[in-house]
Length: 193
Image 1 (tube, helix red, strand yellow):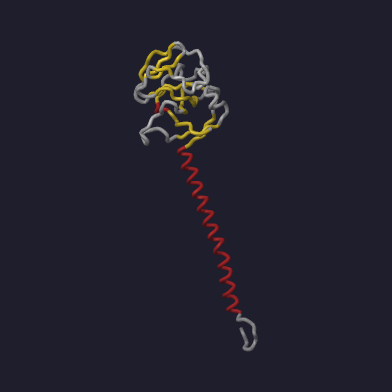
Image 2 (tube, helix red, strand yellow; image 1 turned 45 degrees about the horizontal axis):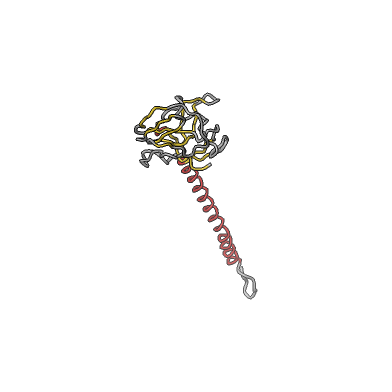
């Protein structure tokens, strides 16, 4: 519509320039949306992957004091043991496992205890002393306690003997309700609190 000598710009050229500017303004928004969507998808995928590997449990009881206390939230690595890694709990590991002992709500409990003996180890308790492979083993014990005698026993494949760090708490392998634990029943290794 430019009529000759005016110094007015061509309306078609102005519209074309406007559309190009509008497209340039829209592009970063589209890129930002794509980026935000991608980050969101990655965050969801990461959360799902982490929930497959880790679980958060609540510590109940005082059996693992002073390391873990009643009410502590603990992070359990579900992938620490098992066929995929061809690993079993080792002496000194803190493990979470399901137990037939019933909690206040009537359901089976999840216990958190320290491995004091594993497959092939010889365990025994006599005169209030825990023996591992014939030697007194007092690692991680918060204080001495009266302990019921346990006859010398060789732990079989997939068997672990667990003890409370606070030996006064008896809800561990010394108690018949818990006994020797099948390591395949372990939920995993406690890695953080």
